[in-house]
Length: 379
Image (cartoon, rainbow, N blue to C red; front, side, top):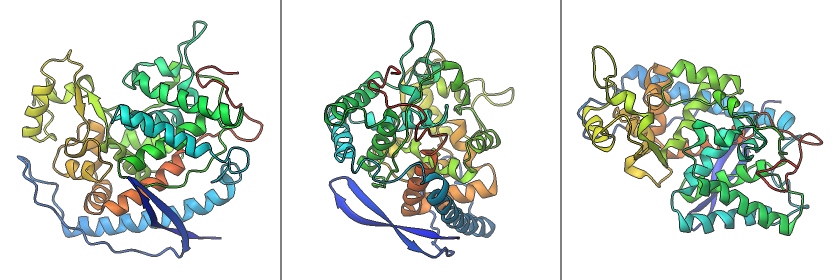
């Protein structure tokens, strides 16, 4: 049966917003697209009538796809994962995890960006099984110690350890490390203003973690076609990929990830021509040499705000990574970027949907996997 759901904000507490899914019909929604006037030394991505039409088509496809995906989830996936999974076995689980996050973010205000990234890196390697948390041992280099994960601060792993310790004290052997990652990623999004959404639980933990498997993760230099292919292999669409890229609205990058855009880009251009020249100069000042490992904000206008300014930056040729700026390289992709740049509510609700879908990749449930006692060591 084809069904659909509508996401609405039902409650706000401090920086947390509660979203609720309400049954409704799948309909085409019209949202006006307005272009802001933001100074830039490159002209903004032009918004023609065709692009406006494409934007409306993208919105319609997001609505329809979300309707279908949620209905499928109510069958195949919801049989394995469900909201309130720990309501009987560990009713305080999500509260304990959230409080652990709040304690951590009071000490380190940007810790949520690493926790969100950790969940993504977990799901894209062997599925959402907590394998990114396992420590290297007995000659095996685990995912955690792979080069691509070296920019995730050790402090973020410690936050998960702290949450696990509280859960083991309250409900021994019940809550998986994989679910801790899914819940704490949601809490991170909510804390920075992206809205609170329900996360199904029921994932179990994997026992294998190999650094070599991190080759499945998308890198900062990839183009749209490559990114789309990588996400498709995980059962996600190009629309999901563009939506989940919005996580780059918080956190930082390091100079090595962008120096190829700033120096010796090609035989005809020293700097990537898709990068706003004024922004390029600013980045060159922050990253003066190829060997610099300086931290650079992913989204300077709102480094600690989960909003749609990331997409607005892309329209101004200020996507930090190649993989960011490439999101406007086709009309359909550019239309979705324009839609999110113009309407933060559509982005926020779409992001919640995409996170739930991503959180169901390759999950271990039932008798598969285990519930680790220590997230860093298989039982």
